[in-house]
Length: 424
Length: 188
Ligand code: HEM
Ligand code: FES
Image (spheres, rainbow over the protein chains, first blue to last red):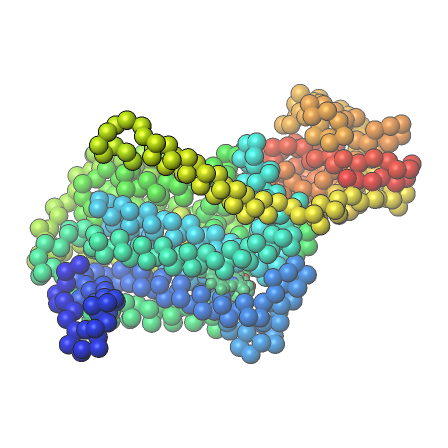
């Protein structure tokens, strides 16, 4: 981690401490002197935004627990108590509930960024896989959190998702019983989900440390996909990246505040304000928006085990992207065909998300099948073949040349790249 | 471990392996309670039987009772419902097995094997009200087959609670139950 300047403490007390635990030096080399490519665009600010959202979730979560009661007969009322009686309880709960959605918006943008600019390619495979693990942990955390208010959607969401495991041959039904701690979703389920909902965010924080560590070993990718070759290609993290990240965070927080203060229930579901009733399923159950594309895939396969495998496969395939993409050119900016297929795939993901919110009937199911097939074809057929047949554009010799020279091919493809609200 | 020096097995290798094996057994013994606690506990198991008074159920009515935290449907079927269910050839069913906890595991899914046993009792259908797809509670008297329709992913069941349209793979389960008198059943 050699930077533009190294940390040499002058202060004797700090010197004494540094020689015993080089903590300040580590922070200095990671977040101050750390060389970042000079051409990073705003899609690169989402890593910082994600860290901010994780801190926000943990802070609001820890405070919510001070007022929340994890019991099947009391949970719903305790959430209402937070909303009505606890001073600023409404704010803390809305921050937490909407914060989860913001966290997912940010992670989807962050992942799409990686997929577009080829950030998963050699030597960043481990970095990418750690990211996929964080994403999985986030999904588990969000799912278990949504169960805690113990409304109708909490209950039936938990029922449907835990039942996915019953599709596993032979041991499936036993696994489900052991997940529930009973014969249906009930108090035992709520308690264990609460425990895990508290634990998982700290595991995420741990994996984030590994993710950032891996990042600092291999260095950041950049819009050209060309590795920095000289000092001229990089700038020190502080002030350049720090200020840019901070600006990105402020903009993101404005977006977050708009949801928080004007439409705090827009991303939620009205049925979750009805207390859980194990005897009546709501007429139309849908998961939280961030799971919708996967839900659409689940429903488009008319076979139980097949549907479950398809859904998990859609996530599993992400882990293999570094090896499925055979192209030698890293950044999508220099890959004319890949670029088109990327946007089609993004549209497919958003389409699947929309279909996931629709009832499972008629044309919706057929459209869901077509898009599901396309999702997998993109990864399993198009990505490997493109690398062999596509003729990439000329890649600049260096980042500096791309930034200062005529060859500006790597300008961020910002058109049509509004914050995607749905993922794939 | 003992590859330095001689390749021969030594007394020390034996001690290493024996110690490691003991350690592994100990670790497994310690892990077990952590896994085992996930099971349904004694208080959950204790609540496992429910009685239903059939005399209160009108002809054509489906009543939902709670058993082990789950809904159970008790349906007083009309003669027409029964005939319709009987007319369906078992071979044409998605799931040709009765799924009746009171019968052998491979009993065919005829209406007689799905309904209550005994003279004049065939009108009674007792099934766990949990869709065999992903566990939603299906809506009664709905769907194309005059049984149930599941609002979650569109599975449909007929008047014997047999699945007639996917994605559900199995017929609605018939729970273990018996008649304690002519008008009362005990489920569980
Ligand atoms: C990765 C970070 C986290 C995510 C994505 C997340 C997500 C969620 C979600 C989606 C809900 C449901 C909100 C609702 O609709 O009411 C929720 C509820 C809750 N979470 Fe979290 N959470 C995170 C971290 C935490 C942490 C660290 C704690 C505790 C230390 C916590 C405690 C709670 C509590 C008590 C509730 C129930 C109250 C409520 O429903 O608002 N969460 N969480
Ligand atoms: S749970 Fe009934 S169709 Fe999926």
